[in-house]
Amino acid sequence: MTGDVLQHLPSLEPGHVWLAGAGPGDPGLLTLLSLRGLQQADVIVHDALVDDACLSFANPAAVLEYAGKRGGKPSARQRDISLRLVELAKSGKRVLRLKGGDPFVFGRGGEEALMLIEHHVPFRIIPGITAGIGGLAYAGIPATHRDINHAVTFLTGHDASGKVPDRLDWAAIAKGSPVIVMYMAMKHLSHIRQQLLLAGRSAAEPLAFICDAATPRQRVVETTLGDAETALARSGLEPPAIIVLGEVVRLRPSLDWLGALGGRTLLPDPFGAQPQGASA
Image (cartoon, rainbow, N blue to C red; front, side, top):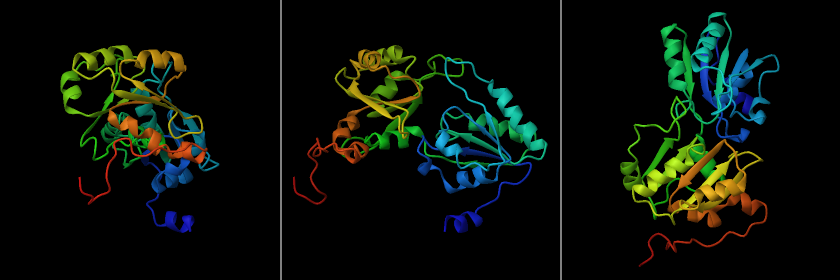
């Protein structure tokens, strides 16, 4: 049945590049188009956050090229990666550029696509489940919950230079977004925490670290904004990780479905929400 479905999907043609998202880790979260690309590619240029389980679906004849970029570690330059995609496509290869999460959510997919356009290389964008959505879901923390928030902000903890983005309006974010999901923010946690506290967020507000989201190695640490640095140091967690701040974190004891599969007893709704239609 799966083979029949894939047969009706677009094909990765020679000289073309697919910029695809692999999701946050679990190979079950690959899209069918990403799976199609894995099976048809001559070369798969993948980043550090693509789980090995996802790469296991690759065409056995495909060449796997690692192009990982990790903060604070030796990495290929982005321009070199983009030009490598051009080089491979120009040589007639079917190229899959596979990224963790979604290529257009802090994934540099736009930069690579613009380079392909400059060199007249045809390409397709294949969205993936970004870690800020999928990682939270695997931790039992919803990005939105109608009894808690009607807005969520996604931000990155460092810019291209490795520093905290100087164009972020911390006061506006702190006041306007009940839930803040932070990518690549562990290195600058102290600065970010200080900015949010200065902007009026409560030290008692719940916060969670989700490390290696949606993989068998996933770890979740629940704490508060005030205690975040101490909890992180005590936990020994290392990137990659997603940080989420907001009252939705309080739902984890009720919605930790992975924990429930391992025997955890889930608790009732901590906010005491009544069924739809019930009187107050």
